[in-house]
Image (cartoon, rainbow, N blue to C red; front, top):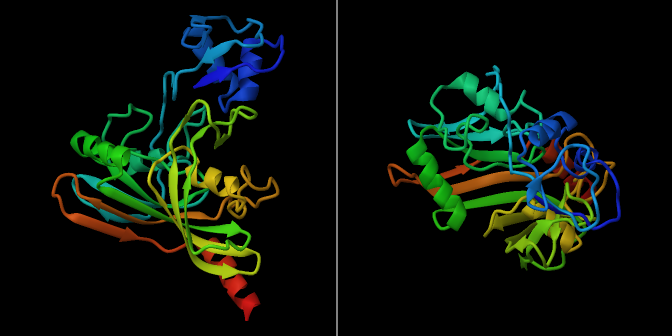
Length: 300
C-alpha cells in the first residue's frame, strides 16, 4: 500500500497510519519495529512526525507471528474433490485473517475441516486463491494443493478460463437493459480505507451489467467481472449513480448488519487438473431473498 500525504500535518507516524488504514495500532507498531514501513524510501520510528508530500509504503498483507487456530464451523460445501472445494460463504464471514483479526474467519474453519490446503499464499491464507468481501455472500473457490492453486491463480488473472456472475440489488430504477462499466479503480485519495474510480494510481476495471428485474425504487441486476479489482462492483455501482442497496461503505452508513445485497451466484471454470468444465450456482441468502419477495408483494 502506498500513501501520499496530501494534507499539512505534524502527527506521529503510528497515529497517522492508524487513522488512514485498517491496521490496528499494535500491528502498525510491529511493522515499524521490524522496519518494513518506509517513509520516503527509508524506515522511520513511530514517533516520526508526518509531513505534507511524504510517501509512505506499507507491505501488503504483512503478518507477524501468526497464530491461526482451527475452528469448528458449519461450512456450506457446494463441491469437493482431491484438488479443490467450492464454498458458499455466508454474508458476515471474513475470508482470511489480516489486520489483527485472526479468529472466526473462513480460513479458521477450513483448517479445522481439512489438512489438505495449498500454502502458496503463506500460513495466513491456506487454500485461498481469491476472496470476496466480508458482507458479500456466495461462491468461493478453495485450492487443496499448490499445483491447483497456481493454475487457478492464472485463471483469475486473465479471466479466460473462469467466469463469475454476481446478483445485486441496486438503488434506483436502472433505465437500460444492459451496460458495460469501464472505469479504472484505485485507492480513494480522500479515504484510504475505500476504493474509487480515479485517473491516477489506478488499474483498469470492467464490469458487465444486465437487468434482471425492476422494482419501485430498485433494480435486480446480474454482474459479470472482466477484471477483479478490490470492491470493483461496489465502486462501479456507486460511480454510475446506482449504489448497491444496504452497502455501509459505498451507499449509506445506516445499513443493517447484513451489509450490501451482493451475492456471488454462479461460477464456471475449467478444472485445473481434470480439464472438466465445472458449473456451480447457489441461491440468494434468505435475508436477501425475503427482501426481494417483499418488493414483489408491494408491486402487486
